[in-house]
Length: 267
Image 1 (cartoon, helix red, strand yellow):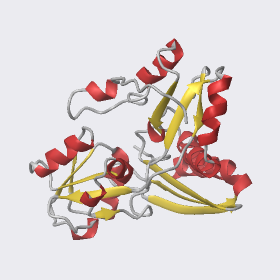
Image 2 (tube, one colour; image 1 turned 180 degrees about the horizontal axis):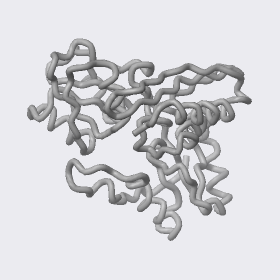
Image 3 (cartoon, rainbow, N blue to C red; image 1 turned 90 degrees about the vertical axis):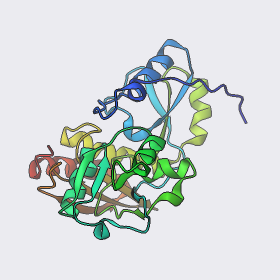
Image 4 (cartoon, helix red, strand yellow; image 1 turned 180 degrees about the vertical axis):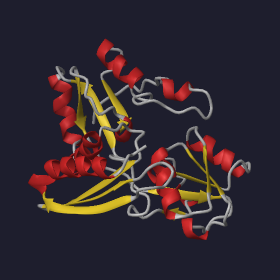
């Protein structure tokens, strides 16, 4: 094992006013600056929040074990699915991607902005502000709240954000000794899956707020990825499954992202 000191850092995303839209990197920038200053040596991010453009002084040293990448539906009553929600039900989400896929999957729902950390969103749900929420299953599972989930949503219905459920361990590019240690935590299949998913998003020209989803799986030398795009109003839904060899993953992801951007406005 290794001795570590945990340093808590408040990011812009943590202190933004309620129900305002987070910008790209809002949960990452302050922590990345702390690494560059030498205040901390490594950082653990939600991989989906890491900006697509990598800082030249930093790198992702490891993608450790990945949690459930799917999105989750939660209601106050339990045992619901997108299809069984009553017409007119209010569903809270902070994501244009989730909003778009939900509208495409089911007409008659009211999709409303709902921000905050997992505990805050659950409290707002339980207080009756909304009838249901859709958030990442990984966050619930990591907090021991997986039992609150009504439905873990099929990725072909609501395609997860690229790299959702994965953690990204970041360090200084020049810190060879720590990079060597961190490399032992890296999972090559998870790295390739996360980087392929993020390449889809990059090829569309979008950011982590774009209504684009991608979920890759690897089985030996076989690569498969569900890729989805939609406008946030639910129009122009596209969901495809691409398959190929491991060695083709990045190239297939990039080509699929370019094609998706041609077919869907992604607004």
